[in-house]
Length: 71
Image 1 (cartoon, rainbow, N blue to C red):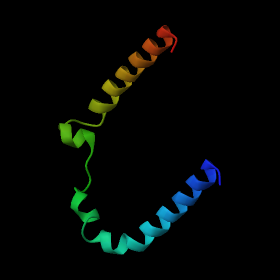
Image 2: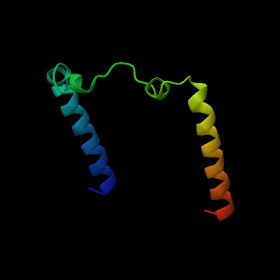
Image 3: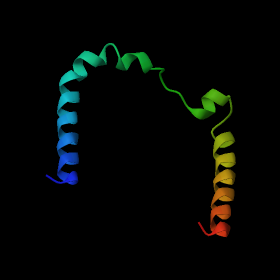
Image 4: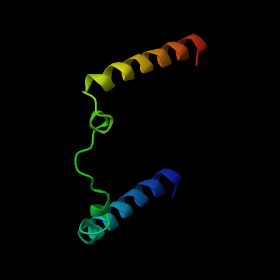
């Protein structure tokens, strides 16, 4: 059996195991990380544009830098 077939088999077995233990995990382990609706603007206390514009500027600068470096 080649690596791809073993990988697919592992994915299928893992999905089957997870689907069987999900009801037990739902009330305990998975609920521990539930913080409700969290957003970056909400955490920073700014409006959504206060995150979008700086992120666009940073991403544009990064892409220009990558283009000039030829990466």
